[in-house]
Image 1: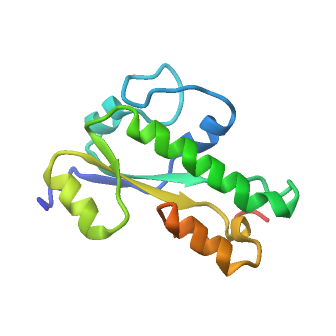
Image 2: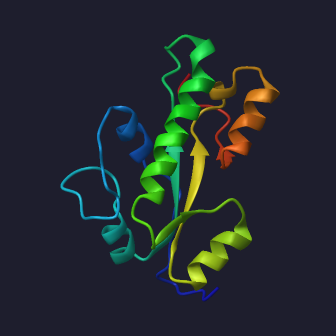
Image 3: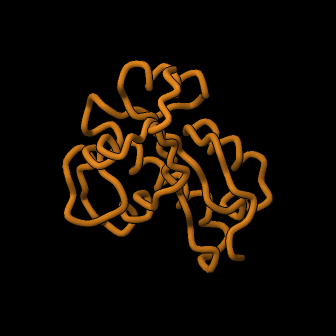
Length: 140
């Protein structure tokens, strides 16, 4: 991968939360509001973007993981909708491959380990659905 000093790996955006609020957005077009879209990511030199999936810890704990998985499904659909230009990446080498192709790597992250409760099965489900980073805590 070309180590252009202007290349940016953005480690957080809340687009997934917006998708859960019922917004139908096309991240492939310039949006009037929101955190990111493909045209602005390109203009900003972003080669990788972490899309944070967060669930409110005040909701019943038995819904944390299922709501996170719903959020991931909506996010993946939004990422896949534009077609060319952005793709989910599940490894560092895939991020580099996408950058060399001129595509933006979408990394799915989970904001707050409460999303798995105390279940390693829930963690594995997130991994199976493309999650590659998770913060251990949030404000709770």
